[in-house]
Image 1 (tube, rainbow, N blue to C red):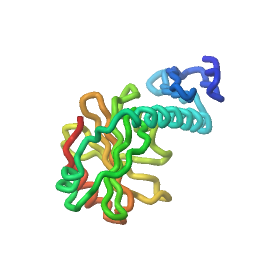
Image 2 (image 1 turned 45 degrees about the horizontal axis):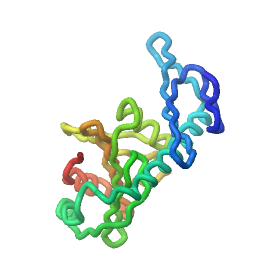
Image 3 (image 1 turned 90 degrees about the vertical axis):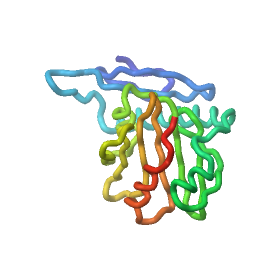
Image 4 (image 1 turned 60 degrees about the vertical axis):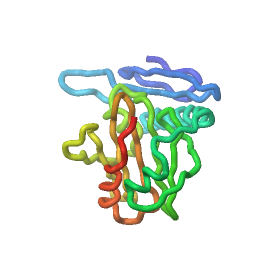
Length: 199
């Protein structure tokens, strides 16, 4: 497969890609391994090339999300719903660029910020999206018996952990993070499970 013009890098043979451009001209790349030999998948890109694919994808996706956020004022929960689920008073925070195609909504309580990004799954599967959108070394812990196959991300050892929740529901992906919550990761992860599921 030849290089994708205008994106600053090429994709090696053995990968399939889909390219679309936002009105700002940023490239959005979704690259998928398709070279299969025997029972295993043969990697077609080096680590540096995969990083370039991921960086370009995030740049374009964030641009798209920011453009859409200006025309959308809806968030999945009211501050009252968040406060009731998490057991402390939250207020609505400013909208931020979202990667999943919608604005990322924020809710604030003192120094704690709840960040949620939700939208249609842009990848062939939730698993592939997690691999594409997570920093290297990230692992995932499944929530037992969860109807939406919810998971908590566990960063590599040199990255400070933070409460989070990721799940797939009705063709959408929902990514929730808590910033400024300190070391009570497990307690906050349990609280996040109490939030009403969307969509």
